Length: 241
Ligand SMILES: [Cu+2]
Image 1 (spheres, rainbow, N blue to C red):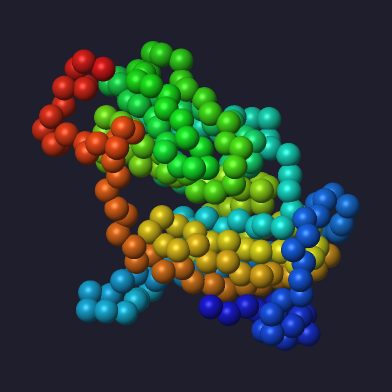
Image 2: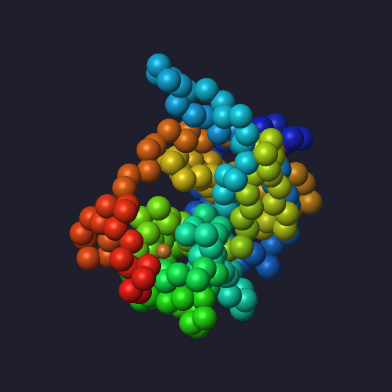
């Protein structure tokens, strides 16, 4: 992993020796803004050890820490469709509400046992009003359905709305970032979060390149009561609700 700051080589030197301390949270509106452009590579496990670049480098969530922002008024949505959650990764701002509509004809459930957000929305069909949850603590919250073990999504609760996903080539861009020392986080399911200090300069573009290693097998989870899911052919829940 390495950092390049275009046109600001003096700062690149500073970063190489540990970034200046800029941990204090600032008000994004009181300072000038700059832009971040970057490229992220996904590395996958090689069959006989080591890692290799993935075929595509999209869907990595890039987010910036170091300043707070009020949550958007608008509700975010995590839908249940074809026995899947959509999208698989949903970034929101601390305090934002998320609605969980069921687009299927069958019952689904939505629950989380994460310490960042613990809830259970019960069982409901598409014709029922969807459940809603406010996410008040930052962190990655795995979301499950108590009926279908294959249903898994992540609500990623962030300090502000400075986030984006990488395109298929790994490229990304974030504009309007407050100038100063900030932190860039990169994450995709199956990888450790990668964090990088960045220096945003008013009216300038900062460039970064980084890598995430998507090498973890996502472990099977349990139902909300801690029990294992019934075998796949046991579908009595679909009929009974
Ligand atoms: Cu379900």
